[in-house]
Image (tube, rainbow, N blue to C red; front, top):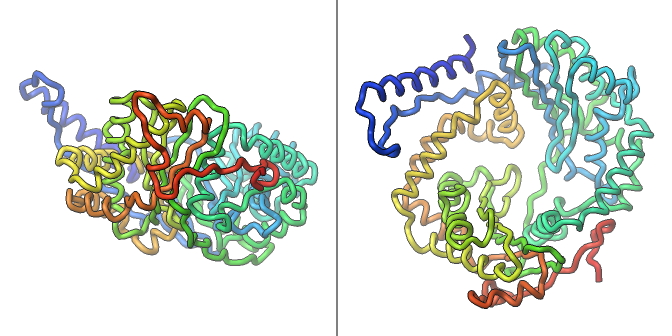
Length: 497
């Protein structure tokens, strides 16, 4: 019986014991009076699954014979932050075409047909910070599947016709950048929070897309796609030693040496406080309230997560959701996030959509709740509810073998395994150690409204009018007053004057 099965059996016996105990006791007259034994769950240990191959690749491996499938992902260090200036979009094209641009033994269309015949799923991509090649197939087809995997990783063809098609599709995507308020808001939020020069804000343009050639894809691939940059997660129907031997073969005798990926650049700027409006004719205004963020390894990380859950991250139990949706009916969804960035500080954000005339009023309520959590201690009930939510849902991180190795591969990628190898073992104790004083301390230190940036995408004139029953002067909600941001040309990303 493997570890995951043992954990499931343990949880099942806990549930059965609870039912038997409940039957033996008198049935309470109210559901909230029901009691259950504490959940017993031991998190898996990363070192039990971690192997370093001869090639330098790191593998997290978990045999699981429940189904005749193999689920594998080769995670690759590097991403669009490595795009050369003037070649923005190169990483994205490279990632898309590794699996869809053919291999030496099979043109792209033939490879797609073979994968369909095998009932296998093969995909590849590069995002901002990392890439991946993923394969899911029946274990009986492992020999052919891993031959294809080797070719996709080591020698993708990047067919010219598929590159041309992908560039055409990408250009159509660029043209739609200003079609909805969501894409405008996320783009301008990053410009305000991190500055124009941050790598994340170097967007693909029509010119950069046009300049990218097949030779550029080959060069990017040769530099960054090699086993020393690989972190593999694999689970499914296989023998552990046999799979490790198979992976050693897949990564052996690599055709190019490649480079070690440089560190992800850090943002050294934060925008000027103020209210910024992008004028767009939409039914509802989209609002983001932004404050400086943190990385995952911040010393106050756990207290910040608990604080944010009470403030706006905990759904219907959180203050912002209750005020904006339940009490005032101003938005369908309103919440906050304080995530802790993987490689650089990711900003705090509270967001919602509301009718144009109620945008200012709803914004003022969110700011009230932010100010209140810095001024007044949270209640013991709020703290208990939040901590229980974190600890009760903790086993969901490891609900399947694939989730176990995926979580550990992500830790390896962001450096958490190296810095905090006991992160998961200690997680619940760290959450439980957060008290009311710690919540108020981090709220005061990290939610300083003198730094607040408010971004609104919507009908400027209607938003500034406000609601007659709830008059709010937007310009007084943040230092710096109200400023209009110009829309950007979708093909050049330059402000439209």
